[in-house]
Image 1 (cartoon, rainbow, N blue to C red):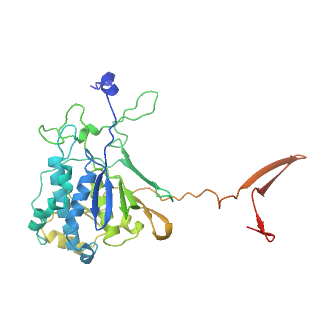
Image 2 (image 1 turned 120 degrees about the horizontal axis):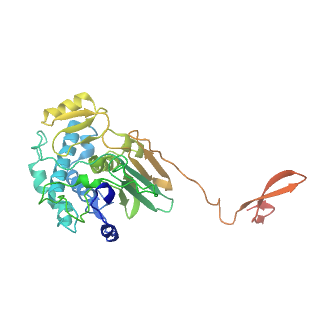
Image 3 (image 1 turned 60 degrees about the vertical axis):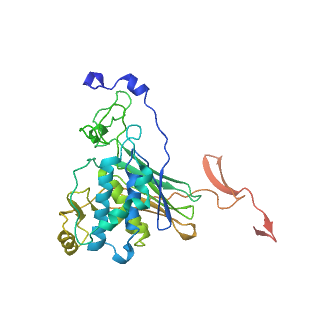
Length: 348
């Protein structure tokens, strides 16, 4: 690093520590949600947006209608306004998590929400590249992992550590260069990101887990997937593939999968709409279906896949043991049932 003009020292690396924090817990229409805490923006602001939608009959509005899209966009504006003001590294700034995720926090916003008119635009916030990786894994026992990893841009800083093959990230560009803000750059400060690995429970048991790459569009996409699954009763595959919308308070992006007539009605409410091919990256979901079935889904926005891996024993006490014998340069393979019991001459 020093040979290339960098300012990071061995002392900086030696003093680095991982920090274990409690996830942010929210609830939405009887479901429990767990997401990453600050400095991540996701857990707090997904919960905040869902608190807004909980006061509306979203299912009755329907998916992809002008009113439902308008409501999503206004909730996103509220979330980004609070993110830009409050969310940062809690070692450096006071993030009022409990207040931001409280139901009463959105009451004034809802009272002033005009369903026929877009609210004023916001000061531009952070920008995050789209090059991130997410995986979601679950097993039949209810163990779930949702994990998102990033080095920011494609190949990060484009610098590798000699002899290791490790790429160094370039996430410092996500800080705000202006002093006095929650995301202002400071020595030792952890950057805020939009990564949103999220696990949702119902009655104390896992219902689904979800995440995706996509930079600053990640947590708003997870927010929409949760609404798709809970309010619109979509399957996992429908939820990840459904058209998305996005704004952080200025231009509005709407995927071309939304009808042009609907985009025109959203524009008529005062939103500056730009049609785009895709918002965010390839989302994946694992869902616990009734009867113990696990379903997985990955969407068309990236080259992700849903994979099921089987294994284990057919039932307790049964083993199929391969044996290989060599006789006169010929090989034969047989499978013996190692443990069986019989009742009236029939295998049990």
